[in-house]
Length: 133
Ligand SMILES: [Cu+2]
Image (cartoon, rainbow, N blue to C red; front, top):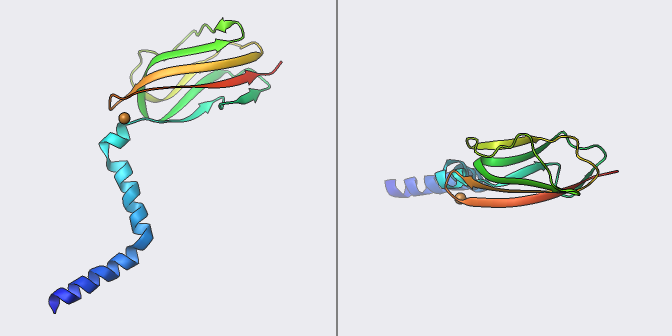
């Protein structure tokens, strides 16, 4: 009898928690799992991939969802490799990387990067943008 009451109580609670409870559990798992937390994904870039800018960007940015250590960072423009005064290579892990860019002449640019997440996974990516004449 007592067992039945307990079971139906649990079933009621499960129904009440329902779908939102499942979602909350999934979010909690994502937030709490050290493996998933340490693995980094690139979120946003500035400029956005494929963007066309009227003015040259003052800086180039990468935003990850977890800290990474950059091991390669190259910008190629209409005149070849772009010399960067200050690169984030060798700096401690960070989730937001901003590289000052001297005035970039009009043309197409490609940013290529490589890095290591805190879980040791290597990552790489790139994006392109255009500075309009
Ligand atoms: Cu990983």
